[in-house]
Length: 172
Image 1 (spheres, rainbow, N blue to C red):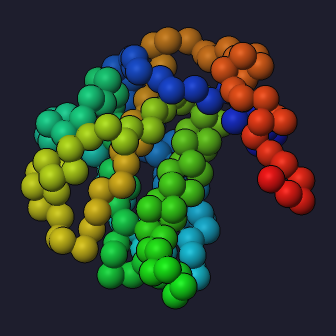
Image 2 (image 1 turned 180 degrees about the vertical axis):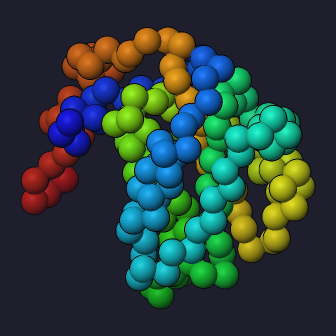
């Protein structure tokens, strides 16, 4: 499948079957994370893969994970992230976003659904997983088999701003 087709197929799944994600599919998702680019190749990230009932319950204290069988907590490591010298912008959240997108698209390519969760209580995740202060949970990627079917691949015509509103060439 071409990348653009995978991107159009992907949608935010908020209802999952109870079927577990096979280890070989999870490994491909994690490999997609592993090859994701990061600023200055510093790789300032750590993933917590929650798939046991106990770990999923911990994640569920911080966010709605829609009864999915798998949740990946994406953390930025502030001790390792590149910092832009001009304005001191730390890029850990950007690196985490790129990595999450890679995983989300890989999950879609394998017939899995996902939803990128940013509405969560980071302090609860930090406490439940005993995270050191340098690790910031940036998002949670929830993954599993969709109980919602497939997304409408034509939805972008009505659910997105027009291309002319999205971009400009050579000037604003």
